Length: 149
Image (cartoon, rainbow, N blue to C red; front, side):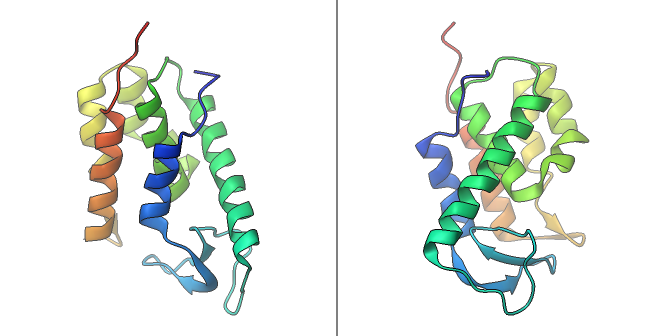
């Protein structure tokens, strides 16, 4: 798996659900956010250029890739890798690290793992339709390809 990198299909998934805002806003959880879901050192009034938003997206994806490489102990398909990177990009490495999703993936329980994505669609105990759509898309991407070796 060490040679897997986020694919164009994975990037399209992230862009589809994140969108891009060049001005800071509070997401549904109240976290200050800018660009493509970037949250580091963002406060009210923060603004950025498209170039900066793209740079932050690349950095945040690289961190998500590193997290997945670190936590997953088995070979993955490209679709599985992409889905997990998008999950981490959206929810953070610590959420994957402590999840049943991670345990299922590392135990090669892929059907159950795909179902686990759907458990992560709430903010403050309330289901968010946009997160439900995103988790379904991640689950579909997770199941989209198989190992050839």
